[in-house]
Image 1 (spheres, rainbow, N blue to C red):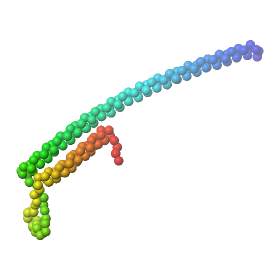
Image 2 (image 1 turned 60 degrees about the horizontal axis):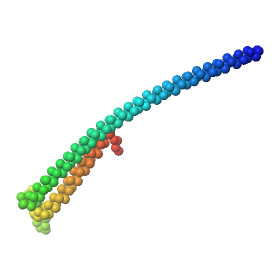
Image 3 (image 1 turned 135 degrees about the vertical axis):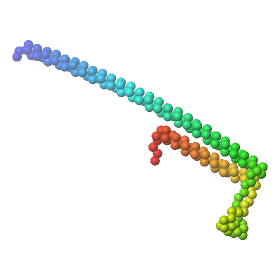
Image 4 (image 1 turned 180 degrees about the vertical axis):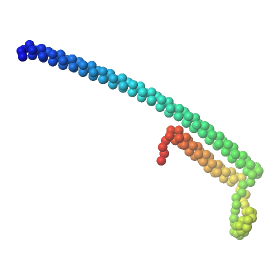
Length: 170
Protein backbone atom coordinates (compact mmCIF):
# COMPACT_ATOMS: atom_id res chain seq x y z
CA UNK A 1 0.00 0.00 0.00
CA UNK A 2 1.28 3.29 -0.91
CA UNK A 3 1.07 6.56 0.96
CA UNK A 4 -1.93 7.80 -0.97
CA UNK A 5 -3.90 4.73 -0.09
CA UNK A 6 -2.96 5.18 3.56
CA UNK A 7 -4.04 8.79 3.44
CA UNK A 8 -7.29 7.87 1.75
CA UNK A 9 -7.90 5.11 4.27
CA UNK A 10 -7.08 7.49 7.13
CA UNK A 11 -9.42 10.13 5.65
CA UNK A 12 -12.26 7.57 5.31
CA UNK A 13 -11.73 6.37 8.85
CA UNK A 14 -11.63 9.94 10.11
CA UNK A 15 -14.83 10.78 8.21
CA UNK A 16 -16.44 7.62 9.60
CA UNK A 17 -15.39 8.53 13.12
CA UNK A 18 -16.74 12.05 12.73
CA UNK A 19 -20.01 10.72 11.27
CA UNK A 20 -20.31 8.15 14.08
CA UNK A 21 -19.58 10.75 16.70
CA UNK A 22 -22.14 13.13 15.17
CA UNK A 23 -24.74 10.36 14.97
CA UNK A 24 -24.04 9.38 18.58
CA UNK A 25 -24.45 13.04 19.60
CA UNK A 26 -27.81 13.22 17.84
CA UNK A 27 -28.95 10.03 19.59
CA UNK A 28 -27.72 11.41 22.94
CA UNK A 29 -29.54 14.69 22.30
CA UNK A 30 -32.70 12.78 21.37
CA UNK A 31 -32.42 10.67 24.55
CA UNK A 32 -31.91 13.77 26.69
CA UNK A 33 -34.90 15.46 25.04
CA UNK A 34 -37.06 12.37 25.69
CA UNK A 35 -35.96 12.30 29.34
CA UNK A 36 -36.72 16.00 29.70
CA UNK A 37 -40.22 15.49 28.21
CA UNK A 38 -40.84 12.55 30.57
CA UNK A 39 -39.63 14.59 33.55
CA UNK A 40 -41.89 17.51 32.57
CA UNK A 41 -44.86 15.14 32.24
CA UNK A 42 -44.10 13.54 35.61
CA UNK A 43 -43.70 16.97 37.20
CA UNK A 44 -47.05 18.11 35.80
CA UNK A 45 -48.74 14.90 36.99
CA UNK A 46 -47.22 15.27 40.45
CA UNK A 47 -48.34 18.91 40.64
CA UNK A 48 -51.87 17.92 39.62
CA UNK A 49 -51.98 15.10 42.20
CA UNK A 50 -50.68 17.46 44.88
CA UNK A 51 -53.32 20.05 44.02
CA UNK A 52 -56.07 17.41 44.16
CA UNK A 53 -54.82 16.02 47.49
CA UNK A 54 -54.60 19.53 48.92
CA UNK A 55 -58.16 20.26 47.79
CA UNK A 56 -59.38 17.03 49.43
CA UNK A 57 -57.64 17.86 52.70
CA UNK A 58 -58.97 21.42 52.69
CA UNK A 59 -62.49 20.09 52.12
CA UNK A 60 -62.05 17.68 55.04
CA UNK A 61 -60.68 20.48 57.22
CA UNK A 62 -63.61 22.76 56.44
CA UNK A 63 -66.15 20.01 57.13
CA UNK A 64 -64.43 19.02 60.38
CA UNK A 65 -64.18 22.68 61.42
CA UNK A 66 -67.88 23.21 60.78
CA UNK A 67 -68.78 20.09 62.74
CA UNK A 68 -66.50 21.11 65.61
CA UNK A 69 -68.10 24.57 65.64
CA UNK A 70 -71.56 22.95 65.77
CA UNK A 71 -70.43 20.76 68.67
CA UNK A 72 -69.04 23.81 70.51
CA UNK A 73 -72.36 25.64 70.02
CA UNK A 74 -74.23 22.59 71.25
CA UNK A 75 -72.01 22.43 74.34
CA UNK A 76 -72.63 26.13 75.02
CA UNK A 77 -76.38 25.56 74.73
CA UNK A 78 -76.22 22.54 77.06
CA UNK A 79 -74.25 24.50 79.64
CA UNK A 80 -76.62 27.47 79.40
CA UNK A 81 -79.63 25.19 79.84
CA UNK A 82 -78.01 23.47 82.83
CA UNK A 83 -77.18 26.84 84.41
CA UNK A 84 -80.79 27.96 83.96
CA UNK A 85 -82.03 24.73 85.55
CA UNK A 86 -79.63 25.13 88.49
CA UNK A 87 -80.73 28.73 88.99
CA UNK A 88 -84.37 27.66 88.94
CA UNK A 89 -83.66 24.85 91.41
CA UNK A 90 -81.80 27.20 93.77
CA UNK A 91 -84.61 29.77 93.57
CA UNK A 92 -87.16 27.04 94.38
CA UNK A 93 -85.03 25.86 97.34
CA UNK A 94 -84.69 29.43 98.67
CA UNK A 95 -88.42 30.07 98.31
CA UNK A 96 -89.32 26.80 100.04
CA UNK A 97 -91.06 25.33 96.98
CA UNK A 98 -88.48 22.52 97.00
CA UNK A 99 -87.14 20.91 100.14
CA UNK A 100 -83.86 19.05 100.13
CA UNK A 101 -83.25 16.32 102.67
CA UNK A 102 -80.83 13.49 103.30
CA UNK A 103 -81.34 10.16 105.03
CA UNK A 104 -79.96 9.99 108.55
CA UNK A 105 -79.32 7.30 111.08
CA UNK A 106 -78.75 7.73 114.76
CA UNK A 107 -78.36 5.21 117.56
CA UNK A 108 -81.45 3.06 118.15
CA UNK A 109 -83.43 4.76 115.39
CA UNK A 110 -81.00 3.26 112.89
CA UNK A 111 -81.73 -0.28 114.08
CA UNK A 112 -85.48 0.22 113.90
CA UNK A 113 -85.24 1.97 110.52
CA UNK A 114 -83.13 -0.89 109.16
CA UNK A 115 -85.55 -3.55 110.38
CA UNK A 116 -88.49 -1.55 109.03
CA UNK A 117 -86.79 -1.27 105.63
CA UNK A 118 -86.05 -5.01 105.71
CA UNK A 119 -89.71 -5.71 106.49
CA UNK A 120 -90.73 -3.86 103.35
CA UNK A 121 -91.62 -0.53 104.91
CA UNK A 122 -90.09 2.43 103.10
CA UNK A 123 -90.18 4.89 105.98
CA UNK A 124 -86.77 6.41 106.59
CA UNK A 125 -85.58 9.15 108.92
CA UNK A 126 -84.52 12.24 106.97
CA UNK A 127 -82.90 15.56 107.82
CA UNK A 128 -83.86 18.73 105.96
CA UNK A 129 -80.94 20.78 104.61
CA UNK A 130 -80.92 24.53 104.93
CA UNK A 131 -81.16 26.37 101.55
CA UNK A 132 -77.50 27.53 101.59
CA UNK A 133 -76.20 23.99 102.08
CA UNK A 134 -78.54 22.68 99.39
CA UNK A 135 -77.26 25.40 97.02
CA UNK A 136 -73.65 24.49 97.84
CA UNK A 137 -74.29 20.81 97.13
CA UNK A 138 -76.08 21.70 93.91
CA UNK A 139 -73.11 23.89 92.86
CA UNK A 140 -70.70 20.98 93.45
CA UNK A 141 -72.92 18.62 91.44
CA UNK A 142 -73.34 21.27 88.73
CA UNK A 143 -69.57 21.71 88.42
CA UNK A 144 -69.21 17.95 88.02
CA UNK A 145 -71.94 17.89 85.38
CA UNK A 146 -70.26 20.78 83.51
CA UNK A 147 -66.94 18.93 83.57
CA UNK A 148 -68.63 15.79 82.26
CA UNK A 149 -70.26 17.73 79.42
CA UNK A 150 -66.92 19.31 78.52
CA UNK A 151 -65.14 15.96 78.60
CA UNK A 152 -67.81 14.41 76.37
CA UNK A 153 -67.40 17.32 73.93
CA UNK A 154 -63.62 16.69 73.89
CA UNK A 155 -64.18 12.99 73.23
CA UNK A 156 -66.62 13.82 70.42
CA UNK A 157 -64.09 16.25 68.88
CA UNK A 158 -61.30 13.66 69.15
CA UNK A 159 -63.44 10.99 67.48
CA UNK A 160 -64.48 13.39 64.74
CA UNK A 161 -60.89 14.29 63.88
CA UNK A 162 -59.78 10.65 64.09
CA UNK A 163 -62.60 9.49 61.81
CA UNK A 164 -62.28 12.42 59.39
CA UNK A 165 -58.58 11.97 58.80
CA UNK A 166 -58.59 8.18 59.22
CA UNK A 167 -56.00 8.31 61.98
CA UNK A 168 -54.89 4.92 63.26
CA UNK A 169 -54.90 4.67 67.05
CA UNK A 170 -53.51 1.96 69.24
